[in-house]
Amino acid sequence: MKYFILAIFICFSHFGFSQILNLQNSKIEKDSSLIKGNVTASLSMYNRSAAANEPVEFFGYNLKSSIALFLKNSRLAFINDFSYLKINEDPFLNTGFQHLRYSMFEDKRVHPEAFVQFQYDNFRGLFPRWIAGVGLRHDLVKTEDFSFFFSPGIMWEYEAWMIPNTEDEVKVSFLKSTNYIGFRWDVNEFLDINTINYYQTTYDSDAELWRNRYSIELNINSKITERLGINNSFTLSYEDEPIVPITQTIYNFTAGINYKF
Image (cartoon, rainbow, N blue to C red; front, side, top):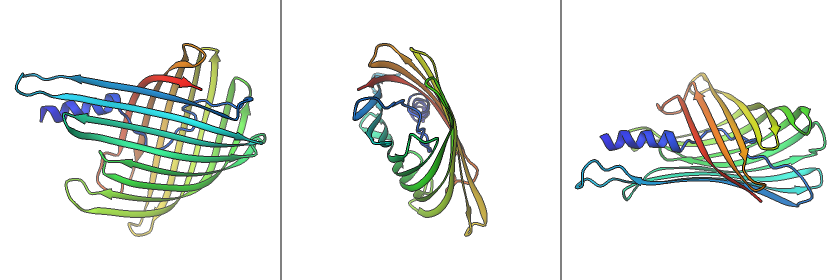
């Protein structure tokens, strides 16, 4: 039991998994390059055995990447996030997503976006979640150092959840309203701050209730060199009516090294 409690602490100290994507987590701005991207990675490996005859070893990593292909007045972005934790020989935490987004007419202050996403979270019993949708992004303020934006949209979502402590699975699909608002501020050449807030909602006619999902993420990126930097991220997510009885509020803090190319 004590190892399970320690593992829970490690999970939420080192490996968070946001149910909602932060599009502003890694800054990729258009320049003369056709393809740009960045990678943020962190690694943990150690033991905390209290007794010689009870060895306990922990191994885990978090890997995030953002790659963008720039076309004329448009952008195709591929964003990934993976977290993994193994205790001795047993996988304990395995979460991640792959997100593909196409933004059109980015030279306009109002422009459409289309996206698809695959997601999983075995620790909370989610496998898989499929998302596909469209939105209309509004860049209310867009300068060289500061941007403020919001986007209303609509999406289809399919989820398969395992009911905790059972072998039963629940599968659902909904048409949802998906909306985000956020900003990015380049404080100086070494520091930038960004945050994004999501609100997604739908009416579940079978359960006769509204299902609402909220999320906020704050990122602070510090540049060490032209290609290396440090990323600090805090995420808080809340679902008022989860599909299965799981924790409604989850939060996490992560820190890692970022490499741009």
